[in-house]
Length: 290
Image 1 (cartoon, rainbow, N blue to C red):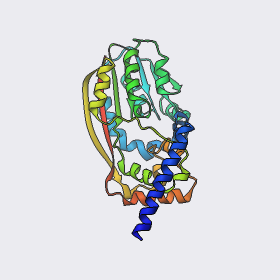
Image 2: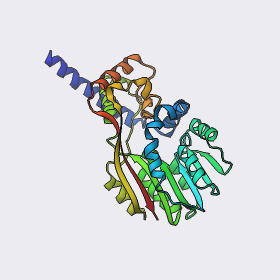
Image 3: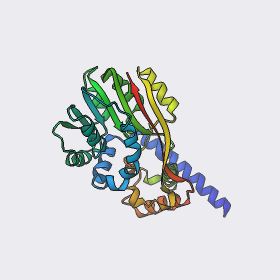
Image 4: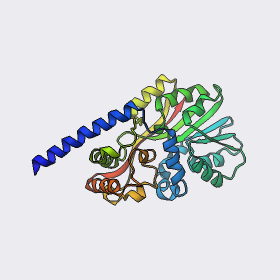
């Protein structure tokens, strides 16, 4: 029996490696469109299912912003408008542009933000920054979003777009966030290699040290930072149906048919129940100054 199990394990590994090689050769990676479709789908329930867990951390970051801002403000990855609402209340006379890749999230933000001074822009975060003139923004904010882009490039573009003395405030997950979910996901990939549809290259920072070095290279200095963890629930309490409403699997649901294939879904949930570590966000928040 043990020999059969080992044979199955190595066979699955070989099949997964071959599948990964084929997808890499055909350049099938999850992209902004996959993330966009995920957030469009879950935008109606995002605040109730997930944002409520993150709100205290987000507010702690916002409380570190300056009391007054008179110049342009950008809200990157604004989602359903939690940070945008806060910025409107704090800086009512300021021009604010709120960007997000998902039309569904922007629609929710428009409904939630009752201010005529906000301009909503749909598109990729990095592309948005690249399109802006240099030295024009006084404040850039991003909550839980830059890890879905390319953080080092976001930092360089934010520095270029900021005025001298301007600030970039953000909170971002580190790479080991929600580790039980990604262990279960990886094991499901190995068990169902033929069902793998796309690949992902994670860009969430590994450590604050890494991120701070990238910030310094971009010409930004650290005014304030904090590293922390926030526990959500035990892995055994996290059903797949709930996870698919949270954004945790945004984009990754294009890699495996978690919604459409019962065998894949059951496999994922069985591996998730095995995990003993809690689901927790490991995050960095910081205010950087140019």
